Length: 184
Image (cartoon, one colour):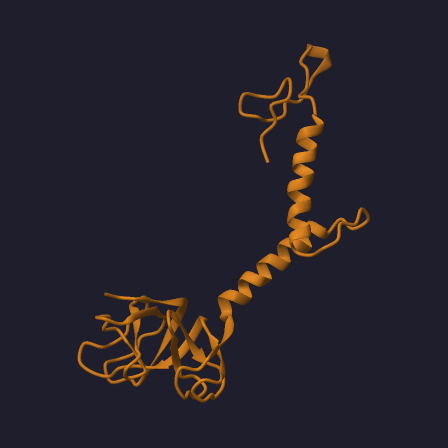
């Protein structure tokens, strides 16, 4: 994509309205500019698997809507399947190397388990003084005790608290970030 550099364009690359009565020439429309615009738009449409159709004037809208829907689905809760590193129950937190998620169903060690890795989930949390959660506070995974905590020392960052949870609360809501970054 580029701004036009055709004869009679403005210095900013904009089209100029001509006025033949005042001897002001309008900007010429060049084939290379039209082709660039066409290919940019066609690329968006085709990237969503839509076959170009001269009689359908809604294809760009359809392609953008499909892309937005895919992003919304990813934001709400994408899930992926891994081999369970240990026995899990639905809703349990699971760390697989550097990927963290909440189990969608029960699984035994070594068997496939589908994990929600993005979106909000409720997880068991560490209980104790100074361990309250406030919205926006970083949440880490304590894999040895298989629970979430705000104590990040030597643990994996998994997301951020989205609801308050007091020191004595046994569960908290976390917005998962899709990875589990180790904190050194």
